[in-house]
Amino acid sequence: MPTRCAWVPLEKEYYVRYHDEEWGVPLHDDRALFEMLVLEGAQAGLSWDTILRKREGYRRAFAGFDPQAVARFGPEDEARILADPGVVRNRLKIASAVKNARAVLKIQEERGSFDAYLWDFVEGTPVVSGWKRREDVPARTPLSDVLAKDLKGRGMSFVGSTTMYALLQAAGLVNDHTYDCFRYRELI
Image (cartoon, rainbow, N blue to C red; front, side, top):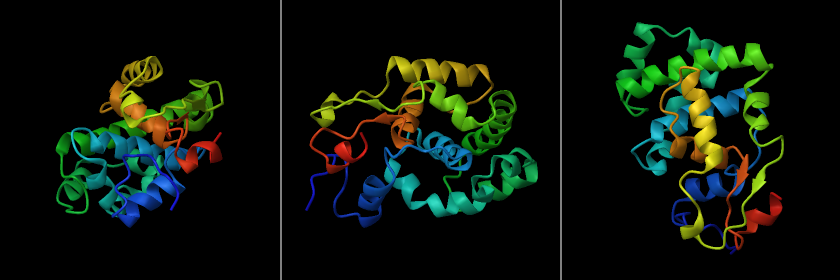
């Protein structure tokens, strides 16, 4: 069995699959990046396991994470999602996803894509950390501080520095697989 990052619960196949196939893989698709933005914001204060188990519910509730569709959501849509047991039913997080979709559309108009905007923060190349131990991996960095501040300035919410560092890791802008993890070398 290959060595994985210590945070992966090996008894949970869906979690292992997420680590092995998605986490830290560079994303360049606006829809996938918006998905990570919404899911990481939904995770704030909760476990990633909770969000990962509800991921399909989020995909259904949020129009497959199409930012254009979500940006058009109104109060009826938010009420529908709030009643959906397939998502974390938090009024502020649901409203945030809609508000953030609108901000993503403005970023797309300004920069051509949400992808171009995000990847400019790392000059188009993933930051390779090379941490030896799980305990070495920070919860936030100066990079995530700058990203969070910029997104908040654009009117987004649930985009604090810790949440944005989780997005940077998940979307592969930062390779935070530990040095002993088999994915670390595959992604450099």
